[in-house]
Image (cartoon, rainbow, N blue to C red; front, side):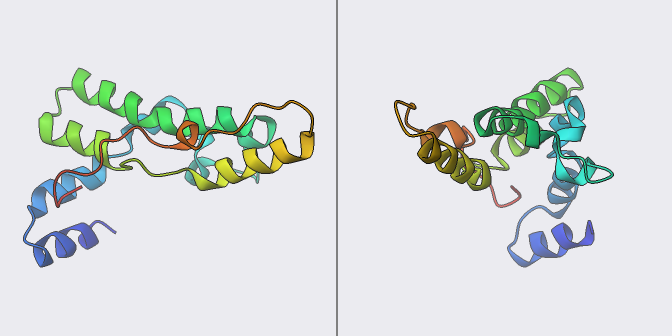
Length: 131
């Protein structure tokens, strides 16, 4: 729940209100393509099953850029925009990275190498305790 960010923020001397508001808004970019995120998938349908892992990764990564754009349009303020931009840091989308490597190995022949960077969020890494 949203009490967790408050308690956590207080325990590390961060701003509890900013942590709570960030918890509400950090994933607003998912609004653009909601059915590609597991929390919105219904009846066992997973749209990623029909996509190349690299495309799935691009869609997941894009929710950060989309969220930043929405936040700017709605004038949510720099602190919230920073939270949206930083909440995944430079994390690796390991499921699709491993799937791409597995598929690349099975193709044999002249498949292009799988680049880890293509499966990483662009960052930046979190800059504040609230993120």
